[in-house]
Image 1 (cartoon, rainbow, N blue to C red):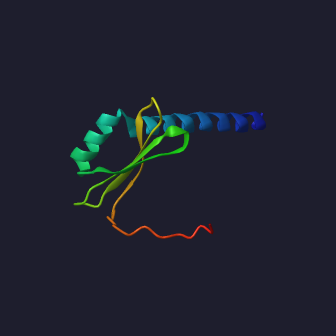
Image 2 (cartoon, rainbow, N blue to C red):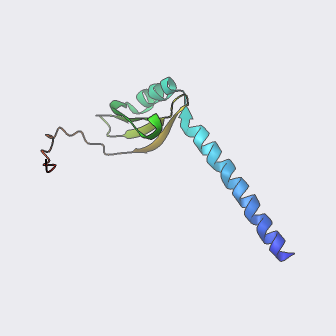
Image 3 (tube, rainbow, N blue to C red):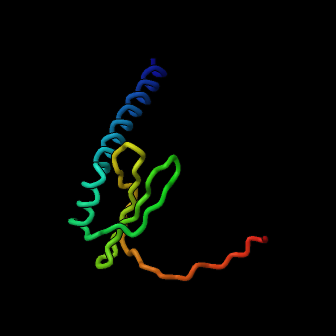
Length: 104
């Protein structure tokens, strides 16, 4: 009996955890234009860089030159844009590219 209750508690905990993760993801994802607008209005951030990630995901870095706040978003093809990281103290660098010798 104790074993059954113990296993049931794991199942209930897993279900609650999954529900919490889904809600958190929903709160961090929206239509791309909405995300861009909100980052600009609320934090003064604009796009600093864009790149193509795994599985053709678009990865963008937004930052504010005034406040130093930054946000990284990921958009999977045909899906919503999700904010995956954010922080403070973004620095703008204009460093020359390194000349790497690739042994050729």
